[in-house]
Length: 101
Image (cartoon, rainbow, N blue to C red; front, side, top):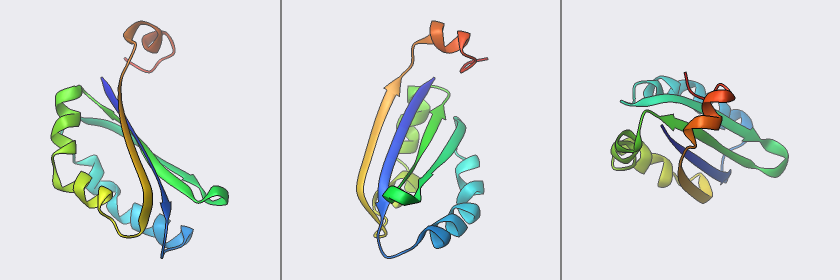
């Protein structure tokens, strides 16, 4: 498995507009090859949003990173202070805490 954590702030749209857009885009993310899950993050009080993506492997993450959906997120004019950090995982303890089947 491989994990990507993305965070950003909203600019030019509010929480409700962002939430509505996310509802519309969820299917696009669900169709990404190799994506096991995406958890959508929201902290309106600090204007911090983002996602935690779990991929089958690093190759699936790299394919996503090279694709149109990642480029659209990274280049969205309503997102500022965008950060994206990918991580490998520790298989043993992750399995114990039910992060891996």
